[in-house]
Image 1 (tube, rainbow, N blue to C red):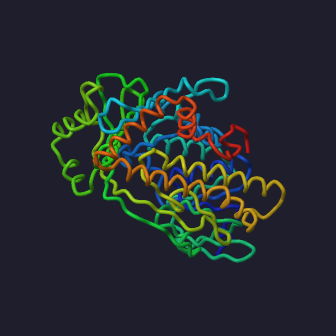
Image 2 (cartoon, rainbow, N blue to C red; image 1 turned 120 degrees about the vertical axis):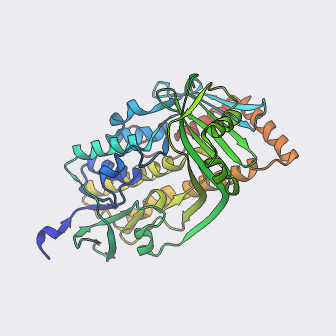
Image 3 (cartoon, one colour; image 1 turned 90 degrees about the vertical axis):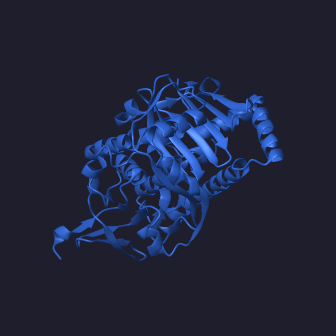
Length: 411
């Protein structure tokens, strides 16, 4: 093997998705040498039709992206969420969150932002190009990971070798890193499929995100730029395919019925896709020379829009423990460093997954007494300002033991 086929670095990130590239950018921004192995070509991700999904970025996640130098490349493409309205079906009793009721950094801030996945990828690629300490290898496939007490070796399909102190698994639900570590999973499926698409409408959304809890699953309308909105419609899996295949006019009529018609005339801007919903929780987030982030470690129901936000909290916490160790000249893949990350992140993740699962079961039914209790509960929250402010701060991701990046403190 030629010397050119051996790459030596401090950290290797497996996976070039939204979480993986953010992880690599955060480390490189702080001066940690990092290699990111990405199975897909950037040109593939730049195609407008490759990924029609959208992403919800909570305020805390914006701070993480800002700290990684990514946010300035995507801010203009992100539609702010200024209000959130949550209702049980179409009850007149609902919770209304107004961003003017919460002050952060000395002023009122949006709860978050909605943008196209492709725009976030473009921003990440732009940031990668600015970071000489980050080597993005794409397309490339990791096929084997060997570990010992001193480090890890990742073998690529083309024969190249990457040596590092630590392997970060950001390689999704079928993670090679997790499989190599022998970390077991707890999983369960919902009888729901998320129907997604993007629409344009004649009436302004005014930055309002709307979520109706319907018997077959939540129906969300999320505000984007240019008078567009993202639809995330959770439906019984047995019915989802039928709705996806409806003639366009009939599908739009169904959107009008479920949204209440407040958006005026609607047109579809993307195809419709269905994503079966399930939960995945790794029993451990770390093993010898391996740490998991994002969907390698967890996947939850989109009922609260926390999927990528949970992953970016992983990124912020893991980046902090790695950078602290690196600057002290310590081994970034040592058991002590990884244990700190595990303590920080796993409890928060399991708790949020349990809360989301509870909400799914609480709201995805039409049982009379439960329905009445839900409506009363929403009304009570709406009329208790301290409780409502707590929930608003939680939605923004600024509750709990916050990493430096979330607090706006550079790594």
